[in-house]
Length: 201
Image 1 (cartoon, rainbow, N blue to C red):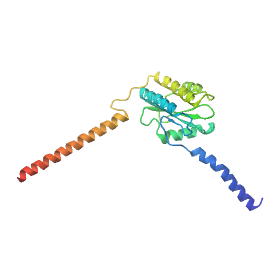
Image 2 (cartoon, rainbow, N blue to C red; image 1 turned 120 degrees about the horizontal axis):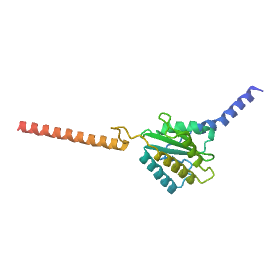
Image 3 (cartoon, rainbow, N blue to C red; image 1 turned 120 degrees about the vertical axis):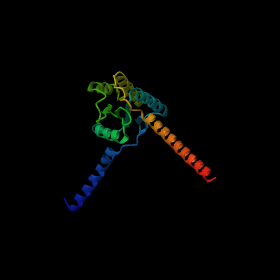
Image 4 (cartoon, rainbow, N blue to C red; image 1 turned 30 degrees about the horizontal axis):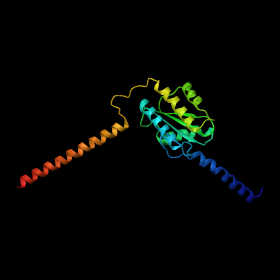
């Protein structure tokens, strides 16, 4: 084979390979508990599902989230772990469960790799079995959410350690403390100004 043909073959091969590499690393921005870049959920369904997953999180301290994707099954684990870390799933809560929901095929469950698994292997199987790949996407996501929510609610989760607060409460405390500090500084400055004025007169 001539040098020109080798060059053309190499260029052609790189062009064919580029979409595969780009697709494998293309992780969208997070969009609520269920990220749906293909818009397979209607607006109303997305709102209802968000409320369902948010209720599970508030009740259990476990961040449940998912990504509806067209990635092939053999890429779900690697992409899911990358999205889990990039999006900070579970970072503000006690634990996290992440669902890679492929357009074709069954759900893939990813647990927080840095914490004790919140689901046993048998419970992961229950979640996977709850997914019906041939059903409408809304039905699939709701079945996954109902199953994992039921499992987590039935667990005796350890109470939050003494002194550890919710992220929202922590922020409110910080804002309140800052306001009090600023008010105290303002009053001190005002008192000094008054004292200085009195001394002058």
